[in-house]
Image (tube, rainbow, N blue to C red; front, side):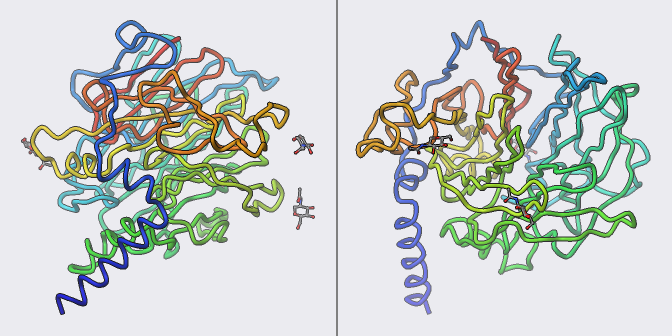
Length: 425
Ligand SMILES: *[C@@H]1O[C@H](CO)[C@@H](O)[C@H](O)[C@H]1NC(C)=O
Ligand SMILES: *[C@@H]1O[C@H](CO)[C@@H](O)[C@H](O)[C@H]1NC(C)=O
Ligand SMILES: *[C@@H]1O[C@H](CO)[C@@H](O)[C@H](O)[C@H]1NC(C)=O
Protein backbone atom coordinates (compact mmCIF):
# COMPACT_ATOMS: atom_id res chain seq x y z
CA UNK A 1 0.00 0.00 0.00
CA UNK A 2 2.72 2.44 1.05
CA UNK A 3 4.77 1.68 -2.05
CA UNK A 4 1.70 2.30 -4.21
CA UNK A 5 1.15 5.67 -2.52
CA UNK A 6 4.80 6.54 -3.02
CA UNK A 7 4.62 5.56 -6.66
CA UNK A 8 1.59 7.77 -7.19
CA UNK A 9 3.32 10.66 -5.43
CA UNK A 10 6.50 10.16 -7.46
CA UNK A 11 4.52 10.16 -10.72
CA UNK A 12 2.68 13.31 -9.67
CA UNK A 13 5.89 15.03 -8.66
CA UNK A 14 7.55 14.04 -11.92
CA UNK A 15 4.54 15.33 -13.87
CA UNK A 16 4.62 18.59 -11.99
CA UNK A 17 8.36 19.13 -12.38
CA UNK A 18 8.08 18.29 -16.05
CA UNK A 19 5.28 20.78 -16.57
CA UNK A 20 6.47 23.61 -14.40
CA UNK A 21 9.97 22.75 -13.27
CA UNK A 22 11.18 26.31 -13.40
CA UNK A 23 8.46 27.57 -11.12
CA UNK A 24 8.87 24.59 -8.77
CA UNK A 25 12.56 25.41 -8.40
CA UNK A 26 11.99 29.11 -7.84
CA UNK A 27 8.60 29.18 -6.17
CA UNK A 28 8.56 26.04 -4.03
CA UNK A 29 12.01 24.71 -3.21
CA UNK A 30 13.84 28.00 -2.77
CA UNK A 31 12.75 31.20 -1.12
CA UNK A 32 13.10 33.86 -3.85
CA UNK A 33 15.67 36.54 -3.01
CA UNK A 34 13.19 39.41 -2.89
CA UNK A 35 13.97 42.79 -1.30
CA UNK A 36 12.00 44.08 1.68
CA UNK A 37 10.29 46.29 -0.89
CA UNK A 38 10.72 47.69 -4.39
CA UNK A 39 8.42 49.99 -6.36
CA UNK A 40 9.16 50.69 -10.00
CA UNK A 41 8.44 54.44 -9.83
CA UNK A 42 10.39 55.45 -6.76
CA UNK A 43 11.22 54.92 -3.14
CA UNK A 44 8.56 52.88 -1.31
CA UNK A 45 8.93 54.98 1.87
CA UNK A 46 7.89 58.17 0.10
CA UNK A 47 5.70 56.90 -2.75
CA UNK A 48 3.59 54.20 -1.07
CA UNK A 49 1.11 54.30 1.80
CA UNK A 50 -1.03 51.55 3.26
CA UNK A 51 -4.66 52.52 3.86
CA UNK A 52 -6.14 50.98 7.00
CA UNK A 53 -9.08 51.68 9.24
CA UNK A 54 -9.46 51.56 13.04
CA UNK A 55 -11.69 48.47 13.22
CA UNK A 56 -9.24 46.45 11.08
CA UNK A 57 -11.89 45.31 8.63
CA UNK A 58 -10.02 46.51 5.52
CA UNK A 59 -8.13 43.33 5.99
CA UNK A 60 -7.35 40.16 3.99
CA UNK A 61 -8.84 41.43 0.72
CA UNK A 62 -8.95 38.92 -2.15
CA UNK A 63 -10.14 41.12 -4.99
CA UNK A 64 -10.97 44.69 -5.90
CA UNK A 65 -12.14 46.47 -8.99
CA UNK A 66 -12.38 50.01 -10.33
CA UNK A 67 -15.87 51.52 -10.28
CA UNK A 68 -16.01 54.28 -12.88
CA UNK A 69 -18.60 57.02 -13.02
CA UNK A 70 -19.01 58.24 -16.59
CA UNK A 71 -20.70 61.35 -17.89
CA UNK A 72 -23.25 61.28 -20.71
CA UNK A 73 -20.40 61.36 -23.23
CA UNK A 74 -18.70 58.31 -21.70
CA UNK A 75 -15.81 60.21 -20.10
CA UNK A 76 -14.62 59.08 -16.67
CA UNK A 77 -15.56 61.78 -14.15
CA UNK A 78 -14.76 59.81 -11.00
CA UNK A 79 -13.05 56.54 -10.23
CA UNK A 80 -13.58 54.51 -7.08
CA UNK A 81 -12.31 51.13 -5.94
CA UNK A 82 -14.61 48.47 -4.52
CA UNK A 83 -12.68 45.89 -2.47
CA UNK A 84 -13.86 42.65 -0.83
CA UNK A 85 -12.12 42.03 2.49
CA UNK A 86 -12.50 39.08 4.84
CA UNK A 87 -10.76 39.36 8.23
CA UNK A 88 -12.11 35.85 8.95
CA UNK A 89 -10.20 34.25 6.05
CA UNK A 90 -7.96 32.19 8.36
CA UNK A 91 -11.09 30.40 9.60
CA UNK A 92 -12.90 30.13 6.23
CA UNK A 93 -11.12 29.72 2.91
CA UNK A 94 -12.65 27.22 0.52
CA UNK A 95 -9.67 27.46 -1.87
CA UNK A 96 -6.80 26.84 0.56
CA UNK A 97 -8.58 25.83 3.76
CA UNK A 98 -9.52 25.73 6.51
CA UNK A 99 -13.31 25.36 6.46
CA UNK A 100 -13.88 26.03 10.13
CA UNK A 101 -16.21 28.95 10.65
CA UNK A 102 -18.07 30.83 7.91
CA UNK A 103 -20.09 32.96 10.36
CA UNK A 104 -18.67 36.47 10.59
CA UNK A 105 -19.45 38.22 7.34
CA UNK A 106 -16.79 39.85 5.23
CA UNK A 107 -16.86 43.49 4.10
CA UNK A 108 -17.05 45.56 0.97
CA UNK A 109 -15.03 48.79 1.00
CA UNK A 110 -15.27 51.87 -1.18
CA UNK A 111 -12.07 53.82 -1.80
CA UNK A 112 -12.02 57.24 -3.45
CA UNK A 113 -8.98 57.40 -5.74
CA UNK A 114 -8.79 61.21 -5.43
CA UNK A 115 -8.22 61.47 -1.69
CA UNK A 116 -7.91 57.80 -0.59
CA UNK A 117 -10.94 58.22 1.68
CA UNK A 118 -12.53 54.98 2.85
CA UNK A 119 -16.17 54.09 3.38
CA UNK A 120 -17.75 50.78 4.20
CA UNK A 121 -20.41 49.57 1.76
CA UNK A 122 -23.48 48.17 3.53
CA UNK A 123 -25.29 45.18 2.04
CA UNK A 124 -28.86 46.40 1.71
CA UNK A 125 -31.57 43.73 1.78
CA UNK A 126 -29.04 40.90 2.07
CA UNK A 127 -30.75 37.71 3.36
CA UNK A 128 -30.42 37.09 7.09
CA UNK A 129 -28.29 34.03 7.77
CA UNK A 130 -26.67 34.02 4.33
CA UNK A 131 -22.86 34.05 4.62
CA UNK A 132 -20.79 36.60 2.76
CA UNK A 133 -17.22 35.77 1.75
CA UNK A 134 -16.30 37.63 -1.42
CA UNK A 135 -13.70 36.46 -3.89
CA UNK A 136 -13.81 37.79 -7.46
CA UNK A 137 -15.96 40.84 -8.15
CA UNK A 138 -16.67 43.25 -10.95
CA UNK A 139 -19.01 46.21 -11.42
CA UNK A 140 -20.33 47.89 -14.57
CA UNK A 141 -19.44 51.58 -14.95
CA UNK A 142 -22.20 54.00 -13.97
CA UNK A 143 -23.42 55.82 -17.08
CA UNK A 144 -24.56 59.39 -16.42
CA UNK A 145 -25.62 58.67 -12.83
CA UNK A 146 -27.45 55.41 -13.54
CA UNK A 147 -27.05 52.49 -11.10
CA UNK A 148 -24.32 49.94 -11.75
CA UNK A 149 -24.57 46.18 -11.55
CA UNK A 150 -22.15 44.46 -9.17
CA UNK A 151 -21.46 40.72 -9.20
CA UNK A 152 -19.52 39.12 -6.36
CA UNK A 153 -18.38 35.50 -6.01
CA UNK A 154 -19.37 34.34 -2.52
CA UNK A 155 -17.89 31.38 -0.67
CA UNK A 156 -20.93 30.65 1.45
CA UNK A 157 -21.19 27.75 3.89
CA UNK A 158 -22.95 25.20 1.70
CA UNK A 159 -21.87 26.25 -1.75
CA UNK A 160 -20.18 29.01 -3.71
CA UNK A 161 -22.65 31.42 -5.26
CA UNK A 162 -22.54 34.64 -7.24
CA UNK A 163 -24.31 37.56 -5.55
CA UNK A 164 -26.02 40.10 -7.75
CA UNK A 165 -26.23 43.68 -6.42
CA UNK A 166 -26.92 47.13 -7.79
CA UNK A 167 -25.02 50.16 -6.54
CA UNK A 168 -25.73 53.75 -7.40
CA UNK A 169 -23.52 56.87 -7.41
CA UNK A 170 -26.23 58.64 -5.31
CA UNK A 171 -25.82 56.13 -2.49
CA UNK A 172 -22.39 54.64 -3.11
CA UNK A 173 -22.14 53.05 0.33
CA UNK A 174 -25.18 50.84 -0.20
CA UNK A 175 -25.09 47.74 -2.35
CA UNK A 176 -28.68 46.71 -2.94
CA UNK A 177 -28.91 42.91 -3.00
CA UNK A 178 -30.97 41.58 -5.90
CA UNK A 179 -30.49 37.83 -5.79
CA UNK A 180 -28.17 34.91 -5.29
CA UNK A 181 -27.15 33.00 -8.39
CA UNK A 182 -26.67 29.34 -7.67
CA UNK A 183 -25.92 26.48 -10.04
CA UNK A 184 -24.46 22.97 -10.07
CA UNK A 185 -21.98 24.46 -12.55
CA UNK A 186 -20.62 26.76 -9.83
CA UNK A 187 -18.20 24.14 -8.53
CA UNK A 188 -15.50 26.58 -7.41
CA UNK A 189 -16.08 30.05 -8.87
CA UNK A 190 -13.16 32.37 -8.24
CA UNK A 191 -12.87 35.40 -10.55
CA UNK A 192 -15.27 37.31 -12.80
CA UNK A 193 -15.08 39.41 -15.95
CA UNK A 194 -18.35 41.04 -17.01
CA UNK A 195 -19.52 40.97 -20.62
CA UNK A 196 -22.80 42.86 -20.03
CA UNK A 197 -25.14 43.73 -17.16
CA UNK A 198 -26.49 40.18 -17.35
CA UNK A 199 -23.50 38.05 -18.34
CA UNK A 200 -19.94 37.30 -17.31
CA UNK A 201 -17.02 34.93 -17.59
CA UNK A 202 -16.29 33.07 -14.37
CA UNK A 203 -13.28 30.89 -13.63
CA UNK A 204 -13.67 27.70 -11.58
CA UNK A 205 -10.36 27.16 -9.80
CA UNK A 206 -10.71 23.45 -9.03
CA UNK A 207 -12.76 20.46 -10.10
CA UNK A 208 -12.00 18.73 -6.79
CA UNK A 209 -12.64 21.14 -3.97
CA UNK A 210 -12.12 21.47 -0.24
CA UNK A 211 -15.85 20.94 0.16
CA UNK A 212 -15.49 17.21 -0.61
CA UNK A 213 -15.86 14.92 2.41
CA UNK A 214 -12.77 13.83 4.34
CA UNK A 215 -10.40 12.24 3.28
CA UNK A 216 -11.15 13.21 -0.34
CA UNK A 217 -10.54 16.75 0.84
CA UNK A 218 -7.98 18.06 1.41
CA UNK A 219 -6.14 15.26 -0.47
CA UNK A 220 -7.71 15.58 -3.92
CA UNK A 221 -7.69 19.39 -4.22
CA UNK A 222 -4.07 19.39 -3.05
CA UNK A 223 -3.11 16.81 -5.67
CA UNK A 224 -4.99 18.84 -8.29
CA UNK A 225 -3.03 21.99 -7.31
CA UNK A 226 0.38 20.44 -6.74
CA UNK A 227 0.36 18.23 -9.82
CA UNK A 228 -0.95 21.10 -11.94
CA UNK A 229 -3.76 18.87 -13.20
CA UNK A 230 -5.62 20.67 -16.00
CA UNK A 231 -9.10 20.02 -14.62
CA UNK A 232 -10.48 23.50 -14.12
CA UNK A 233 -12.22 25.77 -16.58
CA UNK A 234 -13.57 29.15 -17.57
CA UNK A 235 -17.29 29.51 -18.23
CA UNK A 236 -19.43 32.16 -19.81
CA UNK A 237 -22.63 32.64 -17.85
CA UNK A 238 -25.79 34.43 -18.94
CA UNK A 239 -28.24 35.42 -16.21
CA UNK A 240 -31.81 34.84 -17.39
CA UNK A 241 -34.65 37.14 -16.28
CA UNK A 242 -35.96 34.45 -13.89
CA UNK A 243 -32.59 34.21 -12.12
CA UNK A 244 -31.57 30.90 -13.69
CA UNK A 245 -28.34 30.83 -15.62
CA UNK A 246 -27.21 29.60 -19.01
CA UNK A 247 -23.75 28.12 -18.68
CA UNK A 248 -21.29 27.67 -21.54
CA UNK A 249 -17.75 26.36 -21.27
CA UNK A 250 -15.39 29.00 -22.67
CA UNK A 251 -12.01 27.35 -21.99
CA UNK A 252 -11.41 23.81 -20.72
CA UNK A 253 -8.38 21.95 -19.46
CA UNK A 254 -6.80 24.72 -17.42
CA UNK A 255 -4.71 24.02 -14.31
CA UNK A 256 -6.09 26.14 -11.43
CA UNK A 257 -7.98 28.73 -13.51
CA UNK A 258 -7.95 31.93 -11.49
CA UNK A 259 -7.90 35.63 -12.43
CA UNK A 260 -9.67 36.62 -15.66
CA UNK A 261 -9.74 39.94 -17.53
CA UNK A 262 -10.98 41.36 -20.83
CA UNK A 263 -8.90 43.87 -22.78
CA UNK A 264 -10.22 47.44 -23.28
CA UNK A 265 -11.28 46.73 -26.89
CA UNK A 266 -12.93 43.51 -25.75
CA UNK A 267 -11.18 41.29 -28.28
CA UNK A 268 -8.63 39.65 -25.94
CA UNK A 269 -9.28 37.65 -22.81
CA UNK A 270 -6.51 36.76 -20.35
CA UNK A 271 -6.76 33.92 -17.84
CA UNK A 272 -4.42 32.94 -14.98
CA UNK A 273 -3.35 29.33 -14.62
CA UNK A 274 -2.07 29.62 -11.06
CA UNK A 275 -0.44 26.25 -10.49
CA UNK A 276 1.58 26.48 -13.72
CA UNK A 277 2.49 30.17 -13.31
CA UNK A 278 1.13 31.11 -16.70
CA UNK A 279 -1.28 33.56 -18.28
CA UNK A 280 -3.20 32.38 -21.34
CA UNK A 281 -4.38 34.86 -23.94
CA UNK A 282 -7.42 34.13 -26.07
CA UNK A 283 -9.01 35.94 -29.00
CA UNK A 284 -12.53 36.74 -27.94
CA UNK A 285 -15.50 36.91 -30.28
CA UNK A 286 -17.37 39.93 -28.89
CA UNK A 287 -20.68 38.72 -30.32
CA UNK A 288 -20.68 35.10 -29.19
CA UNK A 289 -18.15 35.31 -26.32
CA UNK A 290 -16.40 32.27 -27.81
CA UNK A 291 -12.65 32.12 -27.16
CA UNK A 292 -9.80 30.96 -29.33
CA UNK A 293 -6.47 30.21 -27.64
CA UNK A 294 -3.67 32.49 -28.87
CA UNK A 295 -0.56 32.43 -26.63
CA UNK A 296 0.94 31.79 -23.21
CA UNK A 297 3.17 34.02 -21.09
CA UNK A 298 5.08 32.50 -18.14
CA UNK A 299 5.40 34.33 -14.84
CA UNK A 300 7.97 34.05 -12.04
CA UNK A 301 5.21 33.40 -9.46
CA UNK A 302 1.91 31.63 -8.95
CA UNK A 303 -0.23 34.25 -10.61
CA UNK A 304 -3.52 35.16 -9.02
CA UNK A 305 -5.77 38.05 -10.13
CA UNK A 306 -5.17 40.09 -13.28
CA UNK A 307 -6.51 43.32 -14.77
CA UNK A 308 -6.10 45.22 -18.02
CA UNK A 309 -5.44 48.92 -17.66
CA UNK A 310 -6.85 51.39 -20.18
CA UNK A 311 -3.68 51.27 -22.27
CA UNK A 312 -4.07 47.53 -22.81
CA UNK A 313 -1.29 46.47 -20.42
CA UNK A 314 -2.09 43.44 -18.29
CA UNK A 315 -1.27 43.79 -14.59
CA UNK A 316 -0.52 40.38 -13.05
CA UNK A 317 -0.14 39.75 -9.32
CA UNK A 318 0.94 36.58 -7.63
CA UNK A 319 2.56 34.51 -4.95
CA UNK A 320 6.32 34.03 -5.42
CA UNK A 321 6.68 31.32 -2.77
CA UNK A 322 3.88 28.83 -2.30
CA UNK A 323 5.02 27.16 0.97
CA UNK A 324 5.14 30.57 2.66
CA UNK A 325 1.60 31.34 1.57
CA UNK A 326 0.41 27.99 2.93
CA UNK A 327 2.14 28.73 6.25
CA UNK A 328 0.39 32.11 6.48
CA UNK A 329 -2.98 30.56 5.57
CA UNK A 330 -2.44 27.94 8.29
CA UNK A 331 -1.85 30.78 10.79
CA UNK A 332 1.70 29.66 11.62
CA UNK A 333 3.33 32.00 14.11
CA UNK A 334 5.56 34.63 12.45
CA UNK A 335 4.89 33.27 8.94
CA UNK A 336 5.02 35.79 6.13
CA UNK A 337 4.68 35.39 2.37
CA UNK A 338 6.12 37.56 -0.38
CA UNK A 339 4.45 39.76 -3.00
CA UNK A 340 5.17 40.40 -6.67
CA UNK A 341 3.26 42.30 -9.35
CA UNK A 342 4.28 42.85 -12.98
CA UNK A 343 2.92 44.57 -16.05
CA UNK A 344 2.72 42.86 -19.45
CA UNK A 345 2.84 45.48 -22.18
CA UNK A 346 2.16 44.37 -25.75
CA UNK A 347 5.39 44.44 -27.76
CA UNK A 348 5.23 45.90 -31.20
CA UNK A 349 6.53 43.36 -33.69
CA UNK A 350 8.66 46.18 -35.06
CA UNK A 351 11.06 46.05 -32.10
CA UNK A 352 14.38 44.63 -33.21
CA UNK A 353 14.22 41.63 -30.89
CA UNK A 354 10.60 40.62 -31.48
CA UNK A 355 10.22 37.27 -33.19
CA UNK A 356 13.97 37.02 -33.70
CA UNK A 357 15.82 33.75 -33.21
CA UNK A 358 17.26 35.00 -29.92
CA UNK A 359 14.09 36.60 -28.55
CA UNK A 360 13.88 34.16 -25.67
CA UNK A 361 17.50 34.78 -24.59
CA UNK A 362 16.93 38.48 -24.16
CA UNK A 363 17.53 39.86 -20.64
CA UNK A 364 14.79 42.15 -19.43
CA UNK A 365 13.23 43.65 -16.29
CA UNK A 366 16.73 44.61 -15.19
CA UNK A 367 15.75 47.40 -12.79
CA UNK A 368 14.02 45.07 -10.34
CA UNK A 369 16.12 43.66 -7.46
CA UNK A 370 14.99 40.18 -8.53
CA UNK A 371 14.47 40.40 -12.27
CA UNK A 372 11.73 38.32 -13.92
CA UNK A 373 14.51 37.49 -16.38
CA UNK A 374 16.22 35.42 -13.67
CA UNK A 375 13.30 33.04 -13.61
CA UNK A 376 11.57 32.94 -17.01
CA UNK A 377 12.74 33.50 -20.59
CA UNK A 378 11.50 36.58 -22.42
CA UNK A 379 8.07 36.53 -23.98
CA UNK A 380 7.93 37.29 -27.69
CA UNK A 381 4.70 39.22 -27.56
CA UNK A 382 4.84 41.04 -24.22
CA UNK A 383 7.34 43.18 -22.33
CA UNK A 384 7.27 42.01 -18.70
CA UNK A 385 8.28 44.53 -16.02
CA UNK A 386 8.18 44.34 -12.24
CA UNK A 387 5.95 46.97 -10.64
CA UNK A 388 6.29 45.97 -7.01
CA UNK A 389 7.96 43.24 -5.00
CA UNK A 390 8.41 42.52 -1.32
CA UNK A 391 9.67 39.62 0.77
CA UNK A 392 6.49 40.10 2.80
CA UNK A 393 7.98 42.38 5.45
CA UNK A 394 6.54 45.56 3.91
CA UNK A 395 3.54 44.08 2.08
CA UNK A 396 2.79 40.36 1.87
CA UNK A 397 0.55 37.80 0.13
CA UNK A 398 -0.24 40.06 -2.84
CA UNK A 399 -3.20 38.80 -4.87
CA UNK A 400 -4.60 41.79 -6.79
CA UNK A 401 -3.07 44.97 -8.20
CA UNK A 402 -4.92 47.68 -10.11
CA UNK A 403 -3.21 50.40 -12.13
CA UNK A 404 -4.98 53.66 -12.90
CA UNK A 405 -3.68 54.72 -16.33
CA UNK A 406 -4.77 58.31 -15.78
CA UNK A 407 -2.50 58.82 -12.75
CA UNK A 408 -0.12 55.86 -12.89
CA UNK A 409 -1.19 54.98 -9.34
CA UNK A 410 -0.91 51.38 -8.24
CA UNK A 411 -3.29 49.75 -5.75
CA UNK A 412 -2.46 46.42 -4.13
CA UNK A 413 -4.17 44.08 -1.69
CA UNK A 414 -2.92 40.87 -0.08
CA UNK A 415 -4.87 37.73 0.71
CA UNK A 416 -3.63 37.82 4.32
CA UNK A 417 -2.38 41.40 4.57
CA UNK A 418 -4.06 44.28 6.37
CA UNK A 419 -4.83 47.33 4.30
CA UNK A 420 -4.75 48.51 0.73
CA UNK A 421 -1.40 49.78 -0.50
CA UNK A 422 -1.35 52.83 -2.77
CA UNK A 423 1.82 53.76 -4.65
CA UNK A 424 1.93 57.00 -6.64
CA UNK A 425 4.71 57.81 -9.13
C1 LIG B 1 -4.18 32.69 14.60
O1 LIG B 1 -3.22 32.68 15.62
C2 LIG B 1 -3.41 33.69 16.61
C3 LIG B 1 -2.28 33.60 17.61
O2 LIG B 1 -1.05 33.61 16.96
C4 LIG B 1 -4.75 33.48 17.30
O3 LIG B 1 -4.98 34.53 18.22
C5 LIG B 1 -5.86 33.44 16.26
O4 LIG B 1 -7.09 33.13 16.88
C6 LIG B 1 -5.56 32.43 15.18
N1 LIG B 1 -6.59 32.53 14.16
C7 LIG B 1 -7.28 31.48 13.71
C8 LIG B 1 -8.31 31.74 12.70
O5 LIG B 1 -7.06 30.34 14.10
C1 LIG C 1 -18.05 35.69 -34.18
O1 LIG C 1 -18.94 34.61 -34.33
C2 LIG C 1 -19.93 34.81 -35.33
C3 LIG C 1 -20.91 33.64 -35.25
O2 LIG C 1 -20.23 32.41 -35.30
C4 LIG C 1 -19.24 34.94 -36.68
O3 LIG C 1 -20.23 35.17 -37.67
C5 LIG C 1 -18.26 36.09 -36.63
O4 LIG C 1 -17.54 36.15 -37.83
C6 LIG C 1 -17.29 35.90 -35.47
N1 LIG C 1 -16.45 37.09 -35.36
C7 LIG C 1 -15.12 37.02 -35.39
C8 LIG C 1 -14.39 38.32 -35.23
O5 LIG C 1 -14.52 35.97 -35.50
C1 LIG D 1 2.88 42.97 -37.03
O1 LIG D 1 1.69 43.40 -36.36
C2 LIG D 1 0.69 43.89 -37.23
C3 LIG D 1 -0.42 44.46 -36.37
O2 LIG D 1 -0.66 43.68 -35.25
C4 LIG D 1 0.25 42.79 -38.18
O3 LIG D 1 -0.73 43.28 -39.07
C5 LIG D 1 1.45 42.27 -38.95
O4 LIG D 1 1.07 41.18 -39.76
C6 LIG D 1 2.56 41.85 -38.02
N1 LIG D 1 3.75 41.51 -38.79
C7 LIG D 1 4.49 40.41 -38.53
C8 LIG D 1 5.70 40.24 -39.37
O5 LIG D 1 4.19 39.59 -37.68
